Image 1 (cartoon, rainbow, N blue to C red):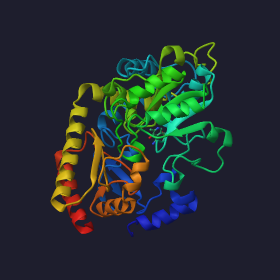
Image 2: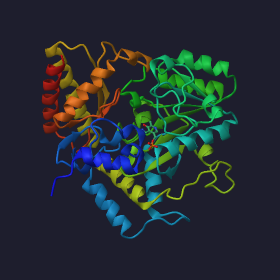
Image 3: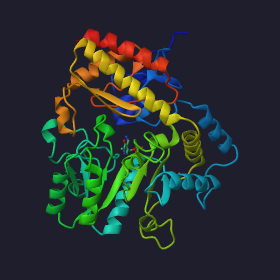
Length: 429
Ligand code: PMP
């Protein structure tokens, strides 16, 4: 029997599904058909093995198919699943843990994806403040829904302009979402003043990882908090990527800034579908899970045993094992190693990152917002990554995408990766 090939199977996939993939940004060249994943590795149908830094856009903090998580999931679903009424012992246990660890979480509700979490957070902020507008930041991503799907990876000439992410979005939703520049408090304050008394919330990725790794400057996040108090808006930290990955309490714990509401997902369940919205009891109690609550919150699969058990297992690992020490140490090693290669080869690039996340921008200064990234050589960025894929190192071959290290990566994978990077960079420069 002929071995199946990536090319043939991708062709077949496109016959049954538009573009052959099930979320827009998965459609990249090369079109690989994955069949196996374990620890730091993934494998395609042709038997090619890759060290994985894509981590499925971030959930894999422990590594693929992590036994402790899988075992807890299978043990749990052997006795329980989904009820559609009441609550479960494990939902209570998980809610308690999140409230114990995440500073802004006085209460928490579960859903299935980050987009659902941000949708509900924004709806709640509108109900609480009785205002309708939302401020987001250029380049930040908060999910696919109409409230937030604008000015994400805009074309450069669309920065600061009306740039809906999709056809079919409601004009009203697009126009009620205002877009500011990250790390620019003056722009935020001017926008608040121009829209006097109409802004319900500011939503922000505390580190905008959707454009790689742009760090908040000192005073930026605390400044947002002050502006929110001054102008009567709620502050929403979208910690769907940063939550659990950078600290069990999220980036808010590291930054010492407590937002009004927080959205969580991804690393919370190490690859299983699970997300949450958390915040002050005063606000969370407005959800109509609470009798008398006036803000609709629902979902057939919310609190399903699979995601709930996976989250409990992941959080137990973060509580009991030196996960963050390990991934932060390897992250530091990776960034240091890449900088050394750049020095040896005389490459003027900026190695950005935090903890287990990093990216190399091909530009010669530290970017502080999306528009600075115009100076990144995007074409080179993608070519570099494609060549690494040929060498068995998987980083998303798409401009501005970050890389993630998991607890399953070891010094060996870092060594192999640095060696491959040096070879590729020698070819490219
Ligand atoms: N917020 C952030 C910061 C994200 O990165 C993402 C997904 N990349 C989302 C929200 C949406 O999450 P999901 O894809 O699970 O709907």
